[in-house]
Length: 529
Image 1 (tube, rainbow, N blue to C red):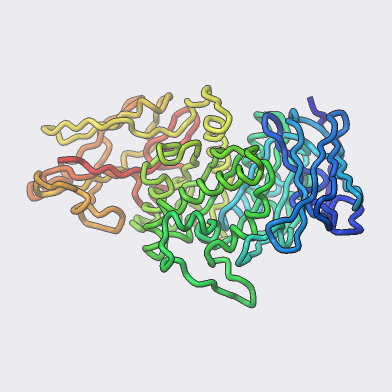
Image 2 (image 1 turned 90 degrees about the vertical axis):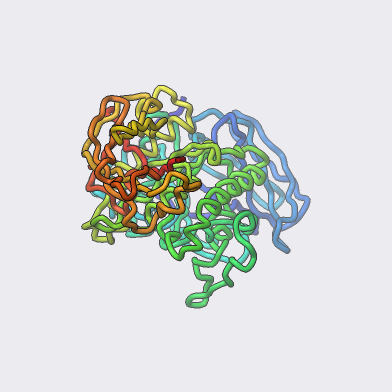
């Protein structure tokens, strides 16, 4: 059991002790932080002056751990790393670290779950920009056991041992620490997601918001991850802007904003990115490899650096792109949503195990003062991520009935030219909010080996025709394609659902989970003739 703290702490980063030498904590450690609870062992690390010195880490009532300083990866850098014994959720604790070089202290430390929040501008999007921002910011005072950490947006051409700069070190959730400057701190989606987790789990939550607007997933990927998907000549040269490495440079954000976190034991990560990868075509086409390779690589490297204490399959959640521009625009936004799922249409799947997804296509904000690419409704996105996280990351199978439905089967009645989609895997009743949203592609011959040659995947095409919903019940939807498949193109070649940049107005797409309001994700299906 832990004690709910009544004092609201506000602090900016210090090195956590009497730092008369280079003996110090890494900057991702500080007073008021959350360390990962059991069954994992939490890692604490920092820097020193001399190799071979004994370092002792002490937690009152839990004993001490001894380690030794060693050479780091960079020339001249000396580091120390210690793993605490598994600690139950709770606190606060005061952790001391001593060596011949001095004494360091971490005070008001809690143990709970640590989540990393990353991506581009919709993750960087701060609380003071979100819907109902004043009330949301004031409510932060009620969550002192949520702790926050935000590094500065920086880049590097090499992996950095530590963060180059911070917006703020670890702070206690409060209206002051959550309601910072626009685009600086704190991430609206990250905080709202953490608030949902805390409200259910009832133990401390640590949130690390490391994000950078307008960036590519390739910038967040290590060279090892990029090698899985791209040839050397597909990786652009390093770019510079105003004397610093441009954030579009591949691996530059991995180096400066992810690599310094690797030693820290974490529970999971959430991600909101993809808008910048919708163009040019090469980046879009490769996303169904680069995104999955990035996830795999993050998992492997966090696990390796923490001595296996961070799981090598840690839960990874992401937001499928929201609506953007108003109107029936058939853009590459739809293709990106599909590629975000490794072309399965849903998550988790066989390629993306232990992942979870929040569908956001039905949450457009055409009048957002920050541009319609930045919807202000982060509350619904956070709730949808939370539902999926509870199912995937916390094994709450009792919440399966809140998951957004996805078709589990297709039944075609040729003489009636109808297709029925079964949503029996939804574990709950579906509801229809409109009769629109489905399209069919019709072809002229039945001897076509691959209908994708005739039914364009994403670009605007006259081949795709609206197919209205003609019937539905609690587990299925039936569409009619008689009027679409004419005598010149009588055969059904493909079906797709909500395949537009902004397929509907706010929460007015076609198929939803009736209990939770979670929407069905978009999909495309090519028929074998």
